[in-house]
Structure formats: C-alpha cells, structure tokens
Length: 157
Image (cartoon, rainbow, N blue to C red):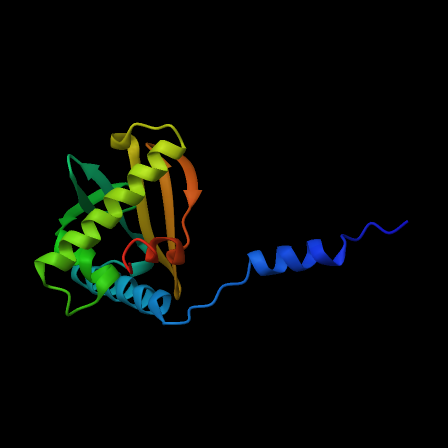
C-alpha cells in the first residue's frame, strides 16, 4: 500500500507554498527595510543583522523602536516606517496615514484572532542576510511569523 499523498493533495500543498511577486512590491519592501537597517547599523556601529525594529500599538497610532539584542537604542519616527513600506518618496501625509492605518488594522486583526489585548502585541522586523523576517509576539511569546506579502495587502489597496 502506498503512503504517498494523492496527486491533488500534493499539488494543493505545492500551490499553497508558491508565491509570486508580480509587481515587485515584496522585493522593494525588502530592499527598503534592509537599506534602513544597514544605515541605522552604520550609525550605531552595529551589524544590521543584529538590529530589530519593534512596532507597538499606542492609542490610535503606532510607535516604532530600534533594538540591539534586548536593548532599546532609539525610537524610529513613523515617517521612517512609511519608508519601509512605501519607499523614499513617500513623505506625503496621506501616505503616512495609509501606512499607519494599515499597520494598526493588521495589528488589531492579529490581536482579535489570537484573543490578545492590542497593547501586548509587538511586531519585530529584522534582516537575515538578504531576507526580511517579521515576527509577532505577545510580550515574550512568539505568536506568528508574518510573510512580507501578507502585509502588502494592507498598503496596496
């Protein structure tokens, strides 16, 4: 008796793991984040792979902090978070508002799904080589790895 999955199940598994970055958004966001962390790393005298940006909900907006290990280095202005997701030319207030609303909406949905108070949710963004890693935590407990493409839908509507 064969222990292999039926062809339809194998195809379904393969398609679920397949992703296409048709418009290049994921690549551009990855470049923006790594570029920002590289610049911040040079300013701090730390390799960029050792830095993490932490996003937290604060009232009706978000606050972003730069960390090295567990030490907070500085607060990152929200306009820099906008550059993560919208690029360098994104200094318009309406774009900043859209990005903040997207992050807040995403974090609210994640909090509801995991039945967490929104103030305990933290989203960490880091670079591992040429990849961006995004993870959600409930204080210190890992909740979810977040693919960059999952966030894109909150900013490209």
